[in-house]
Image 1 (cartoon, helix red, strand yellow):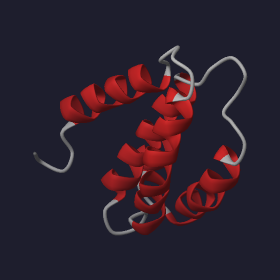
Image 2: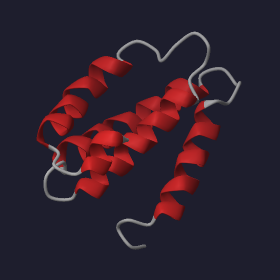
Image 3: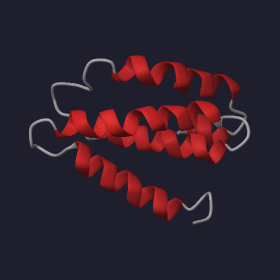
Image 4: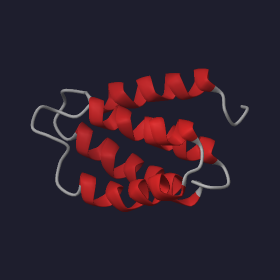
Length: 100
């Protein structure tokens, strides 16, 4: 896969959103617990060198938000995401990363 394969990222975001929006109890929390930590690491660690990684990470986190239940994102979601997201936005030079 080329690093900037938009089709693969699009498919992956759809899959992640579909998993996150499952009506079965506990599925959303399980998806977030498994996906959010590595996505936060990807967003924070590659903002300057490989901005496509940060952009893809932000898109994937967006799919978790869009798949969230009506009760909200859950405790600790934003607290885990905010430091890496804001660090990325502060250091990113790529307009695509900032616009995601």
